[in-house]
Amino acid sequence: MFAAASMGATAFQKGLGAIHSVSHPVGARYDTHHGMTNGVMFPYVMLANRDVIISKMPLVARILDLPKANFDGVLDWILDLRKTLKVPHTLAEMGVKESDAKSIAADAVKDPTAGSNPRPLSQADFEQLTLAAIRGDLGA
Image 1 (cartoon, rainbow, N blue to C red):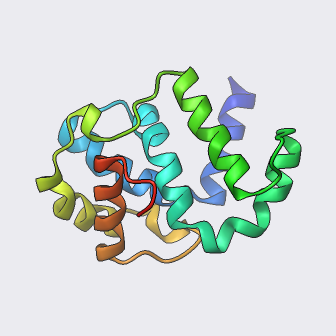
Image 2 (image 1 turned 45 degrees about the horizontal axis):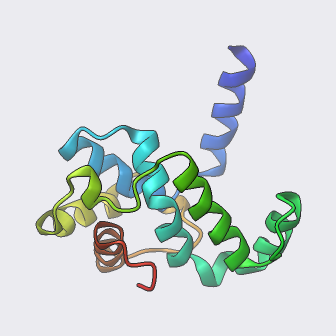
């Protein structure tokens, strides 16, 4: 337990970013499981941060021994892993309504984890991110 607690504390020091910033208000409104909500948000946040994380993806892909050693290879792996684990593709599958996107975004931008996202996100950015995750739009 001590080792697990230490790993968790280390992760919190690094920062949690937009995955958690959106998952917190979604969980508060819809009583969703936090880890599952994080799993739904993962690829949408990856895409929102693409420009600032793309240079790190070849290393991630090599560590995971992926056939495509780039951003798209890592994204494909995440999407496949979600299917294997039966993680929903959208927030809508968890009951989240488009009509709540604006209020979710208002809370997400104020969440303490928002400041550690790889790039700053405005409330409008969080609203677009939330809508993409509700709609299943990986092109947003």
